[in-house]
Length: 300
Image (cartoon, rainbow, N blue to C red; front, side, top):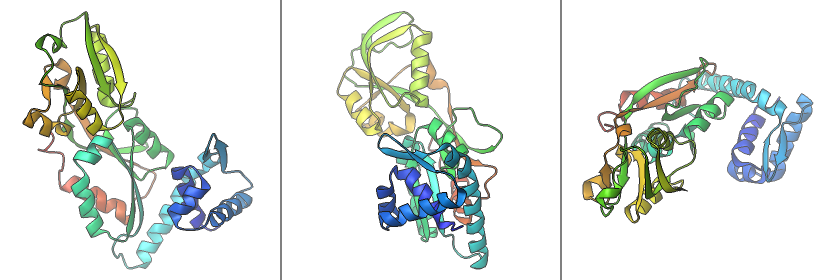
């Protein structure tokens, strides 16, 4: 069995098609097709099926993926040992919450790239629930995100620090529109937020439900910079990580609205699967992450 086919399977899973996987791997589509078909023939099982325009793992593929990952990790360990424990190489797949990736981890990623130039670093910006589930399924080597719970004992968690969210609005928002504490209100405000399962969106909506405060509309924007720009220019609010709006609060582009939910901290965690043996690249990144204490005191 050619273990290179496992990398092809991961590429198809990430890109959603044989053609895009071929572009990612810098090879022809026929090579990708041949690798998959040969592996399927060896296993006597179909690994992929088409859902809409995307290729997704079949049930057999889902069941076998963790075993492919285990074999790939073992082969990587053998290669590293055979090279005399030289600099990390191979591939490292990370999944990181958008706000942490955009506002906290860029310098660390640059340092890792300098120290591990032979590592192919693959970073996915995902929802926290998706990251947790992706690590369980073997899609990612490590996840860095906000603690949303639901972690079985097979996942290993390391706390990186805590942050707080803050409710922000335009400085032009009238004073009578800024009260988000008094119960039983109906406000002509727009709540601009990200995807439905965002930890910050979930907390804000729970706060409003508990106080029976109804807003005029909820608008989804899956980009933090776009959310901030829209809030600053309209009668709208959002609930975002404090570190993500520090600059706007400082220069007066946005103002903070008092709300009880701002006092509850959000825990930031690094998560990996216990059953996977970490390679040299993963160990290095994790060490940088824990040693450099990037979340404190920057996150307050």
